[in-house]
Length: 286
Figure 1 (cartoon, helix red, strand yellow):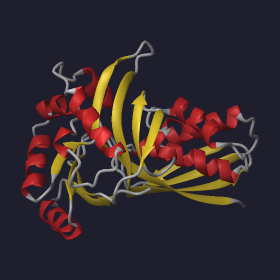
Figure 2 (cartoon, rainbow, N blue to C red; figure 1 turned 60 degrees about the vertical axis):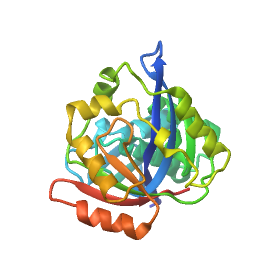
Figure 3 (cartoon, rainbow, N blue to C red; figure 1 turned 60 degrees about the horizontal axis):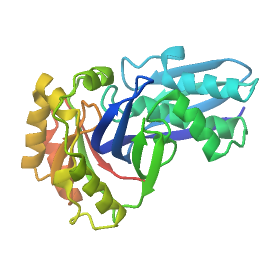
Figure 4 (cartoon, helix red, strand yellow; figure 1 turned 120 degrees about the vertical axis):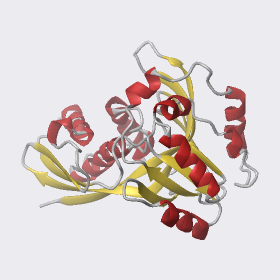
């Protein structure tokens, strides 16, 4: 019986610019996305015909057809006329509704894993086309690394960071609806020029100390913080603990702080841990 295991890495948004609503109902964005070593683990086992998805580790994650991994598997099976099936077990660590791309990463890992399990030999560009049909973040999460994502998030320009970045990511114990965050974003959106400067600085290969992190803004952050004041309180706590900057990842609810020193990051995580929050020390991967 053929078995494949895949890691589904979380993503952090280093800023997020909303450029406007598209005719298809989605939004054009500009965001620097980065995979981090917080991950789910997927085990894919070949079976005769049917697709089955089961999750463990975090309550409230749907099994079966309601899971994005199922959608990815079903789409790949249909697109390439695959007669075989698969049983997918997902060991969850990435919080749900957290702005960390957990469901999208599981879907991306499913596509990678099934390409191996079913021996499809699909090219990267073909897999990207399938991924973009599954969800906006899925194309980026097909591989590890740092990229400027544009359009819906499926157009990717990969960058190389001068060194790995260290984060303390805090999930406050509640989810934020991505649909709600986009619908309720503030009209006074962030300056595109400043964020473009940040992206250009990355492209020029400046060191992390030279990067203008103060220009790394998230257009969804103010609306989310207004509804959930705890978001702002967590940002302040991270900055007080020594973070270079603190921000919301995607539509939230995870807030992350960027640190220079791994020991300082670990100490901050230890200090900020409580019974309600999930606190993770993460490094960039890729």
